[in-house]
Every structure is written in C-alpha cells, then in structure tokens.
Length: 304
Image (cartoon, rainbow, N blue to C red; front, side, top):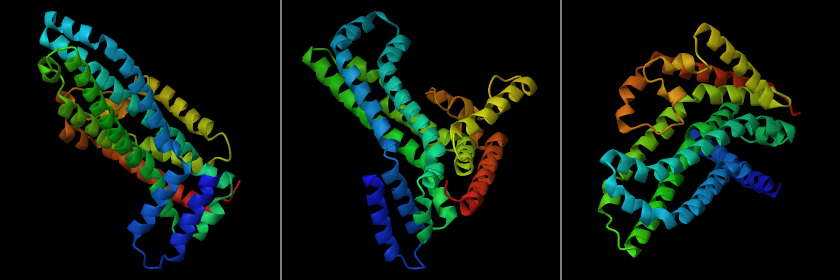
C-alpha cells in the first residue's frame, strides 16, 4: 500500500509541473514508471529465479572438475552440449519466469486499478487512456523481455566467472571450456528470442489478456482462458493442431508463436523468414485491434 501511495505522490508531483504541451514520450515514460512502481513482481520474480538458479549452480560446481575430466573421451558435439547445458537452462528458466510474469501482469494491469478505485486518481492526471494502455502493453512486450535478457546475461557472466575460478583452482585448463562455450552466440540467440519472437510473436496474446483485464469484473483468468481453450479445440479439429497457435506454426517464421520459449541453434534464426510471414502481420493486426478496444473500454469502464 505504501508503494502505491509513493507512486501516486511522485506522479502527482510530475502532473503539477506537466504543461499541456508536454511531449508524449514524457507522459509515456512516467506511465511505464508507474507500472514498475505498482507491480514490483515484474522484476522481483526474475531476480528470485536467477538467485535460486545461481545457488544451485554454485552447489553443482563441486562436480565441475570431474565433468571436465570426462569430456576428453567424448566427441566435440557432446562436449559442447554438456558445457552449454547449464547456461541454456539458466536462460530458459529466466525466460519462462518472465513469460508467466507477463501473463499475470496483463491479467491484473487494468482490473486492479478498477478494483481498488485508483483509476479515479489516474484518470485525473493529464495522461490519455491510449498512453496508459500502450504503457501497460509495453511491460510484457518490451520491458519484461529486455529485463529477462539483461538478467540472463548477468547470470551467465557470473556462471562463467565461477566456473573459471573452480577450474583454475583445480589446475584444469580453460581451453576446452571456452572452446565449447560460444557465449556471445548464446546471447545473440537469447536476444532474438526475447526481443523479437516474444515481443512480436506473443503480441496477440498480451492484447487479449489486457482486453479481458479491462472488461472482466472478477476472475479475469477464467474469462481469458476459456475462449483460448475453446479456440484450441477448434484449432485441433479444423487445422489438425493440438493448440491455438498451431495454425501460425505452419507458416514461415512461425517459431515466434510455438517455439518462442525454446533456445534454438543459430541455424534456426531466420529473421527474413519471420518478418515475411503473413501470419506474423495478421497477429500484429489482431493485437492492434485488441489494444484499440482495450483503450475504448478503459475510457468507459467504471470502478468495481
């Protein structure tokens, strides 16, 4: 409660000095800051996941010298797979945590301000409904993926540093370790999946969740999930696909919808194929329509 009060105080002060011709970017910036103040789980959950993983990784370093000694009898492909595995697993955990945080944030973003009636205060500020909705949409589509990438990179740097210390302390050469750990390549793949596939590929999903959050009076999760379950059943019957996104998976670049949560090899990165996919642009149009309807709903909906 104190966090929300502090956020309101800061935004009220900024509103006092905000002239009518204040740039839209300034209003948008403060709207995003508001979300980070109100929903600290946006970053705390991923920090917690990163901390838990690093603790487990620290314990696993006891077996690292033995594992490196066993690599001599394996082929290069197996060596690379064994060394890369914990780094990819760390990125995958942080990526998954960010994805679920984005889902629950989108479901709460508009309903919570109507439930606690703070929407009356926010509407008193010189910030339009469109700016507010776009700021909320940017959290799961831009802020959380960027934060996931930054946290994953820091975690992997710490993992490299700890592994180096353990190997040197045991008199083991670092040549094999670094020869089979293309860390910069891993970061490129991670950035592509988070900042491109997640941001654009899941835009219709986040648009739908925000719409439900602005419309539902309660149990937003059920109102959001039931139509998707029904759509999945229809997709299974009509498109012979086991999930709602299966229709998009058959199109070029469809990895953004179905494999966005997986770390694929560099060979699977085809930006031209992804951006030329008609299904991607159909999804973005759907997301734009959903966000437009969300703006209209916020303009008309009353507190709960």
